[in-house]
Image 1 (cartoon, rainbow, N blue to C red):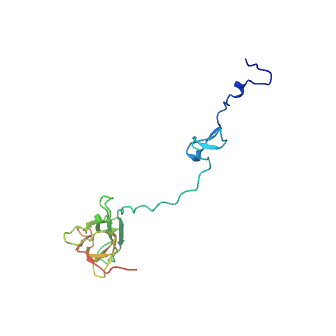
Image 2 (image 1 turned 30 degrees about the vertical axis):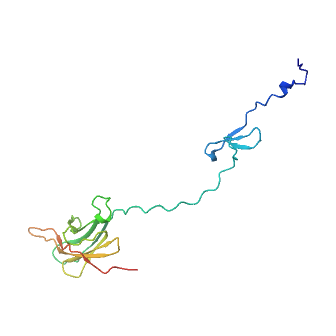
Image 3 (image 1 turned 135 degrees about the vertical axis):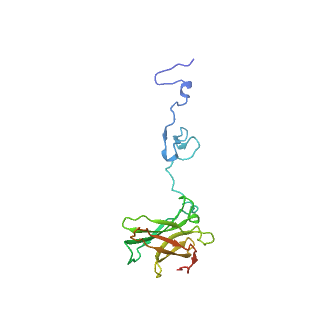
Length: 200
């Protein structure tokens, strides 16, 4: 029989293991893993695997550059005011290039030329890129229009994504006061002639 005296524990009681649970703290830098202090070693472990609970390590190297995205749609507009002595008003000649559906990119772009009286006139647009055999260049992405030094004539130029330049010409018919009054119009050959390509 084992007696318990004041201040003296029996052998069975003295050998009882500690029931204190190991301390733990959540470590945000480790993605929410539990950083625990081992009861046996007194060292920090993560989920009991023995790894230390240090701070977040340095960032890794930058990854490789991603692939180039698709070419976006092309849109451009240019205009000039031809010198008109007679008949009436002031005129404006314009050229535009657009992607028809807004997503196909420059290979599907279409070009237009238009004329109007100013102020207040409405452009009469003509598609100048749809003539069979006219040679409208693939990849046309920007446009310009200007006088070419010939009476009642204008030149339209397009620049492609490959850096090549093409030209077509348009004949201008200006508005008349009448009677009856007639609106302005233009007619383009739509034959696209390659020009000297600019280079650096």
